[in-house]
View (cartoon, rainbow, N blue to C red):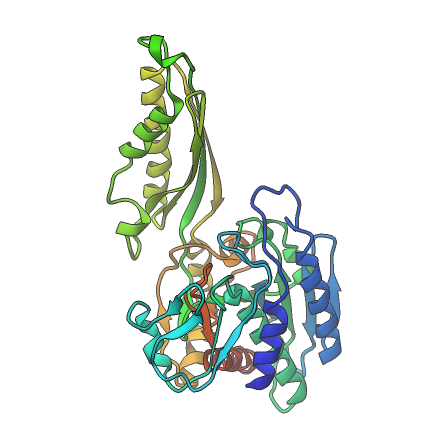
Length: 407
């Protein structure tokens, strides 16, 4: 357990926040700091072919220790952290033998991680939690996944009696901004299938994701002195407000669940002369996804008729529901489910209300379901991960490798 804690904290304290406004890969140079550390560590524990490329993708190989032919499997996690909340100077806190009560993350600012609000905490009574200090995110998304993959590979190296085929591992940048996997070299990776270790609580096993798009809307107004503005002024911010109010009020993240899609306003700015809106559009169903994009275009067209072409919209697809690519190779999901059940873990199979690198990789020819990494409350100051959950993820990775060699 202490090795897991030390390894995770060593990763978490390195700032690797990605930047959606950057046009490079990786989007921030500081992501390379952890990438270099990981490449060196993989080599040190005995992995072969450890490499880091010009886009900061890290890959390595654990050779097969069986004589018969075995499919090549892979395990993948991302090292960037979300730009949604600060990740500078992460100072994790260790809560041993958690007593089920409030955890004071920061007394000075009265920031408390409470089971009264975060009920999941109560299932971890008696366990060891790693939390934030209330001032930053933690980075368990997805440094917990990286920790677990490295620990599993080290365990297999130190226990050659466990039989396995060739295993490839990869750590990637810019997952949080939906771009890293677009540059992932599937041919170089060379796996028949893979698993992203990037989910939440113990047991999560996901092979469905949203279809996703981003809508960037620009509104051009006309500024006139308000004292003489009648029939002359065009207020860009008021048009933006009108568009926002036209979104169905129950089709937003705070009113949807399960496979229900949504429109989500992520950013807005404006004045009389110019306004900008950014939305993300999500739906698990492909037809509904297309209808949502069409509805957004229709709203903008209606406003253009009213305001003489003041509105422009650009919609870009980001990723698609990976179920479409995994259904034909469903044994990769069955294998992970069998691994969990053999360890006494109840699989929680449900659609992701989001996406992972696996969404993009599955459409690039690498079927890639998602497995739990153990964390909770990602992308904010209340993020935490139970160390026992990380241990279970390590066990699942090892068991998948073992079961693949038996097939």
